[in-house]
Image 1 (cartoon, rainbow, N blue to C red):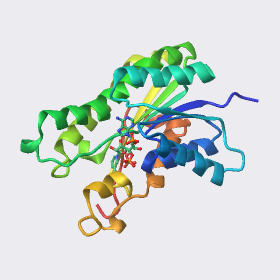
Image 2 (image 1 turned 60 degrees about the vertical axis):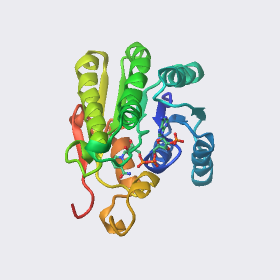
Image 3 (image 1 turned 90 degrees about the vertical axis):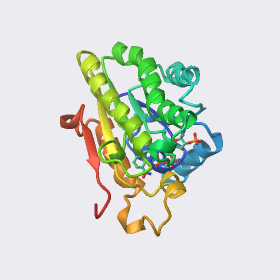
Image 4 (image 1 turned 30 degrees about the vertical axis):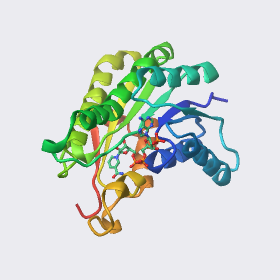
Length: 241
Ligand code: NAP
């Protein structure tokens, strides 16, 4: 019997991350769920228990990935428990609407720290275990805003462009170690993040993706079903766009 892969998923307590966690559980992965709010992560564990007859081993790690020490500790706790990380899903993110001319230093820093630096810190800390096991797969959740910014999402789109750069850099430095990376760039997805910024009048539900639409692509990349797309940005446009 093969050893179940270990996946670390950030932002696992809601939206795209929650459904991705469930799909990876169905693939038999052992799962480290990372986010700042423990109760949200617990709600994902409860969902797995309700939906899956024989849920895999899981652990909850309350951490702010924009804090380098906490990001490193999240990887260390996973490696201490299971001896490895095979799959890193960099899904956690924030999107605060602001016109370019209004974005203050705090907003700019937060946007880059959570959306771009956190993923980098996690990749750095996973590197040793990836190299040791001669394999590792990183799936970075980017955004269509990196390709075609919506007004008010310019700084967010800049940070997501940095994530796309991280995907390419991982391919350049990781290929000889069996490490691959993907960027997934969804349009509007029906999640708490979207609805904190846009109501259904300005963005009707029929023009949005479901979290599952996106999670399925993430999991296909993470489980080796889309190796031909490694290193690229995979767009998932909103319906009707
Ligand atoms: P969501 O439901 O708000 O999920 C984001 C998750 O990230 C939350 O569970 C949040 O949990 C976690 N998070 C935020 N800051 C964090 C931090 N500093 N450290 C650790 N965890 C943190 O939104 P979502 O739409 O599913 O977003 C998932 C990803 O998809 C994001 O990267 C987002 O940019 C991207 N995306 C979303 C859309 C969309 O339309 N929804 C479109 C394109 C791309 P805590 O607050 O508890 O930490």
